[in-house]
Length: 328
Image (tube, rainbow, N blue to C red; front, top):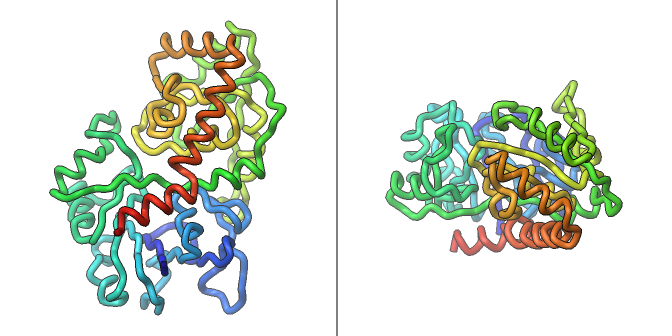
């Protein structure tokens, strides 16, 4: 399958993947491409992993006065920022043989209205959605899968973001983890509710060390912050992450890949990978923590099941298979 992912604006440059490694597309030489959301040129995090599934392309449309000449079978596109400039018709004209598949890049739809997003979805051949929230029950107003089906009047297919679980495990898994709590703070602090004081309370009450690990980049286009971040969290046995935004949740997948037991949060990955601990009810969460913390066998079973489930739902092979079935 000749595959390209296209977006209407991002910090990343256009690149292509050959033999599971990313290279700059606008280069006369085979120049490896590394960016803020990658680990070397061998792993793209989040949506940036899509081209790795098919040895395909990532096209940042804003880089091109004229669209590149490519023989494409499938274009996976997110038009969310510059809808006055880019549309699906121009892609059909340049790539007449390609199936056009929508996807979601930004969780916060600040650059377009919901109706504009719906109109874009409806202009595509296939509509995909990266999280399974049923309705618009999210406090941040993010729409759910069933809500989008109703608005589009068509099938909307759940296809999660791909994660290279095996790469993360092989590179960062630490078998001798410390019995400590990672107090996770995303860069958007508004996505968590009461995490800071609560985690300190849990740590003090149950005599468990609490650690913080927030990597800040001086230059997000050069600094390999993901390398630093993942290397820093992998020694913790527990992670507390009371994220309240109903989206996919990459951190939950990364925890599962690295054998870290996640507590809290209501994102997709929390509910799929760690159903026992997926709650932001802090009283209930403490009861759950006490039970798991005092039961080694239960703890290890949850960690193993989360890893196996991450392979089943989020791995490159699984997402590739799901995507291929959807476009058929």
